[in-house]
Length: 435
Image (cartoon, rainbow, N blue to C red; front, top):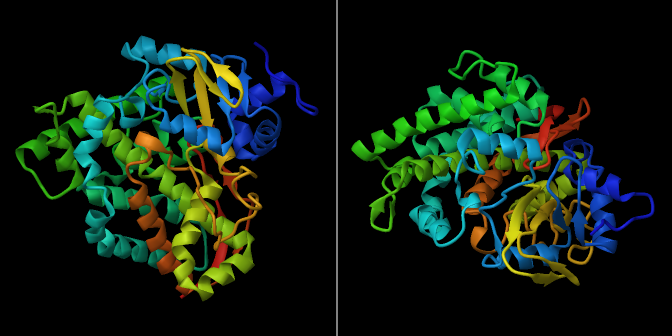
């Protein structure tokens, strides 16, 4: 089976583009997405150095596959990874993953583990955290105000705000936030050397392992540190339970037995990583979109009741998780193509969130977008467990920031991280007037 040729793209170009982290950093990936949605939305993809897979680029197909979790499973491949990297993980761990998080598992184990924290993440229970999250948001806007009217919003505000929320809900000490930042930045998707270098600078002297110069050695060292750190947290919460999420996980039960070590550490891993990078990217990308669209900024400042909808538009616009993989378990027809049992399938959420068949004027940022079924959180049984918390955090930040912000402008070119899995802004230099 061969990839369909396109005018302006040969099959090698479009296939390699879909996995190329640089295409996500300069947003040229949207050219490929747009072409595929129009002409080959279920596209057999054979990039160099990767196992082949189907690229799914239309919103409707992404949602349909996401909801068919019996026919499209997670455990075989979670994200697009070069063959060399897949072999390294297998040789190093004896498994196909460094962790076994909720996104790597299928039912029934996936749902048994998800139930441990499902109630904790419900809106009615998160409501009690609103005052604390609002206070953390205010502290970061106050910090922004103290910086003399200019900063790099990503590195001085957006990176730290959701990290401190995660530290708070897990009940982790402030002294450990440097190590936590390094782990969240480097374990999942260390494709951008600038992000790794920034992480090392920001966390210097704060307890993280020193760089060896070999990315695979460094990742494994961080994974080992992660297991050691959260192994201690787990033991402590079993002996000394507290009113925090770390205790809920440590004391979780699966089939009337205490949660296993690997499952618990993986639970902590997905909580701190998914809860940090994605929210940071949504907040910074949302502010950039407002800065580039002053009429939308003015509309939002004039009517704060638009903030919840604006946050949804920020999440659609940024789509921090660019894809997840599935593996087909039985021959299935999607979009007129037969996906065979054993085939890999990549769900390209950023493409789905620019689908012209679903979103009116999808390449325009609109704080009052009326119809916004964005799929950034996924769909079906694997829909993001922390989606309500993420929305709450971004809402709290903009509810604090916008009434105090008199003006804002870019002072340099914003830069997106070089990554094809989880990505967002890595730099956003701005000047501003902030009360």
